[in-house]
Length: 259
Image (cartoon, rainbow, N blue to C red; front, side, top):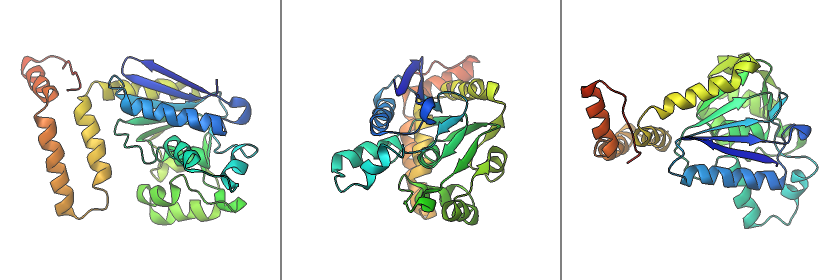
C-alpha cells in the first residue's frame, strides 16, 4: 500500500509508504493521503493525527517527478485533480484537530508544504528541509508562499523560497520551523507522547484553540477577540467543560467525551 492509515484509540497514524521512491507523492498516493485527512477530520473518535514516512531516509520529497509532475503540468488538469491535491497538502479542508509531523528524513518540496499544515513538528537529527520548486521553474503551490512567511521570520522564509537551499534539522529548529530534534529511534515515541498528552485534554477545547488561532491570524485585535469570545462561549457550555470542572474539584483525571 502506498499509504498506511491506522487508528489507535483516539490517535490516527498516517504513514506515506513509498520508501523506494523517497515517499514521493504520485497521483494515487496523493488521493489516498487526501482521503485520509478527510477521514481524520470527519471521524469523531480521532482526536489527534501523526504523519510520517516509511523507512529512515525520507519523510516526503514531494511530487513524483516521473508520474505527478507531468500530470500537474499537463493541460488536462481538471477540477477533480485540483481537489485531490489540495487536501493532501492540508489546505482548505478545515481540519481543526491537531496534526503532529514525525520527520524521519528528507522533507522537501511538497513534503515541506504538507509540514507547514501540521501543528507540532518533531524531526530526526538527519532530517533536512527545503522548498526548491523555483530551481526547476515550478511554483510551490502547496501553500508555502502563504504559510511559510507567517510561520518563521519573513527574511528566512524568503531565503528558503527564493534560493531553494536545504537546511538542517538543527537550523530548522533554531528558526522555529520545527519544535524538537531527536535521535531517530526516539522520533515516533516522542511524537506519540505529544499525541497522548494532547488526548488527555478536552478535545473540544483543543480543536477550538487551533481553529481560533488560525481564523484570527492577521485580523485586527477587536475582530480577533470577538471570534475568541465566540469559541470561549461554545466550549464553556460543553459537557467536557462540566466534566473538567468536576474532575478538578474531585482531584481525578477527566473523562472527556468530546461533547
